[in-house]
Amino acid sequence: SEKLLKVATSIPRDNLVSLGTCFGKFTKSQKFRLSVMALDFLAPYAKYKVWVKPGSEQSFLYGNHVLKSGLGRITENTAQYQGVVVYSMADVPLGFGVAAKSTQECRKVDPMAIVVFHQADVGEYVRNEDTLT
Image (cartoon, rainbow, N blue to C red; front, side, top):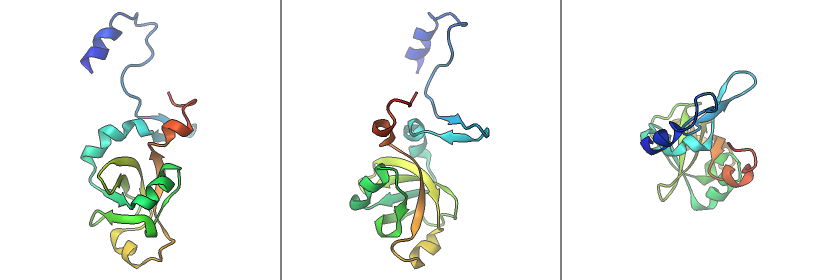
C-alpha cells in the first residue's frame, strides 16, 4: 500500500530488507513455495476452484488433503496437477493446493481417494505462528 511505502521512506536503505506482503519463500532446492499470505491476492483471480463440504473444512485447515467424500464442487475442466484455490461452501477462501485428479476422474473415484493435495491453508497462522514471517 502507498501508506506503507511512505512510512518506509523514513528508514535508511541500508537498514531496509524488504517491503510489502510476503507471498512465499524459496526452498533450499531453489523452488518457490507459496505461503498462505498470498491467498487474499490470488483467490479473486483463481481460474480453478474447489469447494469443500463443511465437515471437511476442519480437516483441510489442520493440513490434510481433500478427499472425494469432502468435495462439494469443483470447477469444470480442471486438469490433473493443476493449482486450485480451496473454498468453503460459503465462498470463503481456505487455502490452496494441487488437483490430484481431473474433474472427470473425480466423478469416478472412490470416496476415500485424494482429490486435492494440500499446500497451504489459513490454519497455518495458528500452527506455525512462531516461524511465519
